[in-house]
Every structure is written in C-alpha cells, then in structure tokens.
Length: 378
Ligand code: SF4
Ligand code: SF4
Image 1 (cartoon, protein in one colour):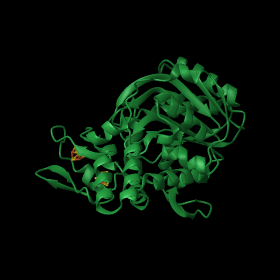
Image 2 (tube, rainbow, N blue to C red; image 1 turned 60 degrees about the horizontal axis):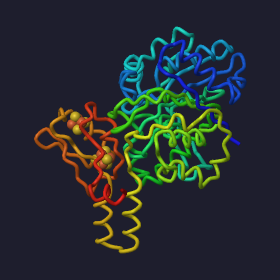
Image 3 (cartoon, rainbow, N blue to C red; image 1 turned 30 degrees about the horizontal axis):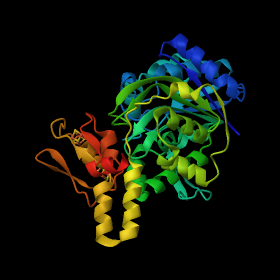
C-alpha cells in the first residue's frame, strides 16, 4: 500500500516551508531511510530559465529546506535536472541562476555539475528498451523526485511521473517525442523512466501551481499544499484530484494502472479541502480518443477528418510572437517553417507533442481546442 500525505503550506517563507515539509514527510516515514554519507539526488523540475514566481519550476526555498534536512542527517546532496535545450555546464548553470537555485549551496548541497550522458539497455522497459540518460543519476544511493504541479499541453498534467522526463538529456528529448508520438506511447515511455529510476520519496510543490497554458506559459495559481508520497503514481493520482482532472483523462495514470502500479493508498490529510474547483486545465485526451473512436468506427478519410476536427493543436498568437524561431528549432517533426518572421505549422507533419508551446519564451504558442471538441465534451 502506498502512503500519501497532503499538508497545508501557505507560502514560500522559509519557516513556513520548513514546518510544512516536516509535517508532510512525518506520516510517510520522513527521512528515516537516510543514513550518514548517503548520496541523495534531488531531481527537481527546472524546465527552463524561469524565475520562481512564474511557477514553472520547483521553488528554491522548498529545495533549500529539504537540503537542510538531508544534510542534518549527514547525507551528501546533489540537486539537478536536465532542462529543455542544451545539457551543458554553461546553459544549465544559467538555469540554476534564473530559477534561484544557487542559494541552495549555502546548505552544503551541491548543484549537479556532471553533464555527461550514459547509454544503457533497458530490457525491463515496456516501450523503452534502451536509453540515453543523465549520468549523475548513477552516483545516487537514493533519488528524491521534487516536482511542481502544473498543467501540461501534451500530457494534461505535469507532476511526479512527467518530471522523470528530465532524466533524458535536453537535446535528446525531441527524439523521444518523435519516437513516441502518441500520447499513450509517451505515457508508457514516462512510466518506463519512472520504473528505471526508482524514487525513494516524491514531493510535489503545490504551494503555487501553474494553470492554463502550462507547463511554462501558464498562470501561477495558489493551491497552498505540499504533497508527499513513497509512490510517484499514487502522488499523481492525488495531484490530479486536487486540480480537478479525472484519472481516466491522464495517460500516465492509465499506463501505471495497466502495469499494476496503482495500488491502494493510505492518505494522510484532507485532500478534498485542497481541491481547486475552477483550476484552468488543458484538456487534451478526450477529444483525441473520441477522434480515434470515430476513426476506427467510420474508417478512412472521414474518420481522419473527424479526428483532426476534434484534436487540440498548437496555435500561434501572431501578435505576441517575437519571431525567435525557438519553436521551429525544437520541433521534432520539422513541422514549423518561418514565414514573414512568424511560424507556420504544417498540420500534416505535426505530432502534437507541444514542445513548441512548452518552449516558446513569450507564451505565444497556445494549445487550441477546436470549438466542436469543446461542445462535444460539455
Ligand atoms: S508543431 Fe509543435 S506540437 Fe507539432 S510537432 Fe512541432 S513542436 Fe510538436
Ligand atoms: S517560439 Fe514563440 S515567439 Fe518564438 S517564433 Fe515560436 S511562437 Fe514566436
């Protein structure tokens, strides 16, 4: 049985955070597994060069407080992630600065400076049979997954399972999108990574989450919670409930369910009291499945037309676009061309991975949900 705790944490003041972390960890066994000299990697969510106030990354004060607790127990702590983009010292250190992480070193924790990759076979993976991953993870005696609760253009929600995509070096991520273009395949890939890199503890920064055009260009939304668990799958189920998503809408939860990873949960705390009823979601799955359903029933061209008419797609807001070409450069399907300094998307090539939406620096790429899908889902 998995244990999950959910505790109030009103803000990111250090004293508030210290008390909330202690309270969240205590019912699920705290840091009892940590022994002196143990090497702990805290796998944060550092998706991009974004300030803590944007609510795209794990808040540095939480990482600071957890590092303090681990170091008090005699652990050696390394905080790391592979953001989107280059996995190099120059780039990732800029991300550390922008996300406020440099301060963490005051606790004695280190920020990962090993930017090499490792290639390994993964015979137990359901879909990922071999992988290229960030080598610093090999030094860990235990991994703590400390993620942020956000909406996600492709997968609906980013929390524990999605955070493990950061085990893949940034420049390899588009390749994974291309290799696993269907949402169900992508979810299976994420669960494979989650199983390949088991986490001793997972903690979700849901003090201020991100709603709307997540995971980078959405709006910060106060939730006021810290969620902790010994299982990333159980923790994601509670996260989904808090922001008003049904488990059936999330492929990652469904992929875990198929593998028998969603066991019973012992819950500490009142989940209902943290539910945000009007959390602005990115709904991506229903219309897709509905489209596939029709496609298989009707078949051929008509089915495909219905499918396209119901799928969410990336959509450029030309007025906000600054013509930086980041979307074009990151697109794994090479579906974007610049015309008159604005991106134009070839819908036939687009695999709806929403990398362009995730990495647009000004939020000019949105998830567009067709009107017909909105009406049908109502
Ligand atoms: S256009 Fe955007 S959503 Fe489509 S494949 Fe390219 S990056 Fe992915
Ligand atoms: S990444 Fe955003 S701002 Fe840059 S060209 Fe694409 S849509 Fe425009």
